Image (cartoon, rainbow, N blue to C red; front, side, top):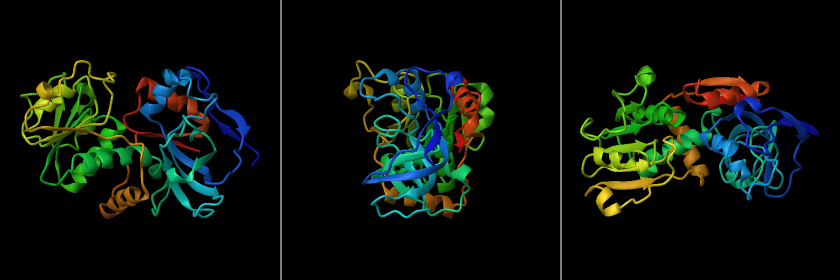
Length: 318
């Protein structure tokens, strides 16, 4: 257990150039937990890291990317966790401020490691941490979704969109889901209504009381105009590639009686993780994923992410 395989990132790297390297298993220290990684998911956040953010001076290189994982505690150090305990971990600086989950072992601060009481297989658990935490927070903390709502998911053919749709439908809400490609309409048939998004939804959809905007600033003004008076819009994703609204005028751009919020997933808690798994268990839900790759095929997994050839969450089994 002296050496392990991991992805080490030190410069801008396309998926086809991602490889596994040998490096020491991290040494345990107080307040940190050593985890044997069983599965981890790929995220848009890691694409941003690979394609540009890796050059930022605040990232000490080389760094092991990966903002989430599922696994077992190998060494709990001085924490309250137990050896062999099933856990998930996410966010809080993973893969940026300190090494993340693209590895056989991960040394992570106790504050972002959460005990899990679930019989789901590791492949399903690997789809949960960041994606379902973000979907849950967006839908319930921000949108206050109820079964009486009609929910618009704008940009639904992504891992977060699928998770949000699964949760909302299990709750009993009506779901209107969008995609900008006609070829992907078949991927959102679980929705009550599937809509082609050409960049303008205002006047084309009706009755929306809550909206989860995963496209981001590129379409946000239109999303605000497309919901009913009294509706809430939560901007969570940035799939549109635009990261800020220049010249945004809240008085003019937010319609009267419409509410705008956003969800930032950097602060998970054990209480919310417990709520998510209780809901999954109560509703007999299996977390949705697009494809599972073996760790030795990490190059293929990350290339598939870059090329968009997998519909939904990519999970890697270590």
